[in-house]
Image (tube, rainbow, N blue to C red):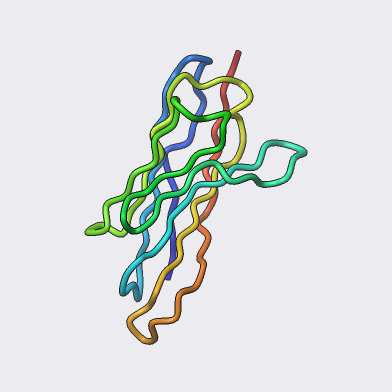
Length: 120
């Protein structure tokens, strides 16, 4: 199982980006999905999560600006980011709790990071 994140880049403050994370491999289904970020010199932090039933949760600093969504048919999750500020700069990682066909034990998988840089 692999998760591939994409969509990062350089954007000016006030701009928008849409991150994508697509899973591949032996995937039976996906439970919770989420996005994390790590700013330079800081610990990785949770940004947003979405459950299998679509319940979402956000950290306070992104509420009203970021929207997490998922497409189970594509084994994908997305993070729409608007009104970006320099404080949103960092490497964004996706995570998913996945059950494989070979066994149905839920395991967490991390995707590759995608760099978001917001210039002031």
